[in-house]
Image 1: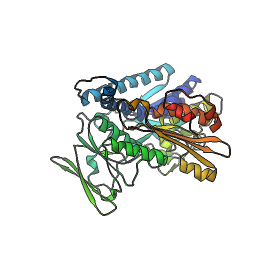
Image 2 (image 1 turned 120 degrees about the vertical axis):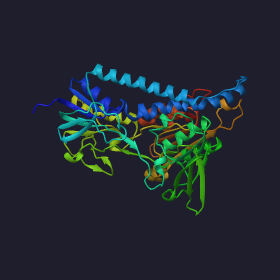
Image 3 (image 1 turned 180 degrees about the horizontal axis):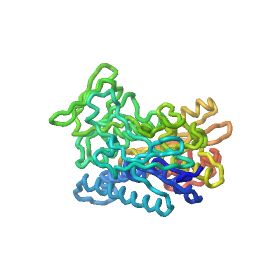
Image 4 (image 1 turned 90 degrees about the vertical axis):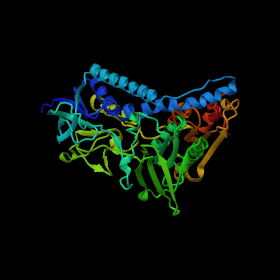
Length: 469
């Protein structure tokens, strides 16, 4: 049977675009459909604009710390609108780059929503029911395309907890980049990495921030030392926490003075917090599978995500999925690697699988954290008494002259049966940059003896990873 395309991709985020371009490089005829801006969550309302805001939030501390080095900094002021405009201008610039990359690769781009008619047919048209496209139809047209293989790369979307009364008054991480006036007071509901990152950004820029969480600690699933060090650091920087929240009974009321947020806690008490016109609901994300027409295929959805095998194939032989819509490791580089592995396998003649072992990640809080491999708890569950933990905590040299009590924590987890380093964790300045290099060693199976035999770069914080005994 003849098809319009060898490969058709639904979703032009990081994973979808990487797959489309790699397949086209191998000579495949490729089409891609996107209803929003090119680049997906990461480029438009995730990694890129968030990291730019992280940079902005560090300047006040830098001004203060410079005095310890003999600098005199005059009165400073911050213009939120100027920053947010510059951030969004950069996003627009990147959208143009993605467009040019698709054009150069000769990938055909369709603007609209893709929906399965059957396993080989996609209908493309405006989804006027979508809140993201309301009042902004692109062309009102509908058309159909066919493809031998179809890749689902629709990503995920933030979700608000439905059981909180008044949750409609809260924004999500999607809308925070469009807020035109800096909130003076912000309540952040949720202690995952998105919530705590924005808590630190806003706090650094001068907003009064309160974080509301169900448990006692943020960042569930991370190593306990990372959780403790970041939460302590955030508190030391002036962020308030309300823990043990009974979120099912939380109420958000809109008043003349802002949002009144009533937070019942599990010990029977109740706390009332007043925020500005918006609070941030950062309670998680889920695959964005609405209106895809998956019911017209054999594709299976398990726990809200597209089910795939080790080669990213769904239950339908010609349909595949990568990225956050599969809800495995929801990181941009993972989606890109999955997509390229798919293209290499099916169009490049080199069978390849994505490896999910020792994938590094970072949390861009203040203090920053990064990690690769197993947490201490995971290592002990897997290796038992053979686990040995090396831990160091110190004040970096940078903070001695400003006389600030900022700390860095580094941690190596070793399986003494093999001497292999099975986990590396860090909280402190430059954690992501340092762990990226350490991740290479961990991925290659380096031993603690290999770390010990490596000469440190002095004076640096990173040298601590090769001097821990």
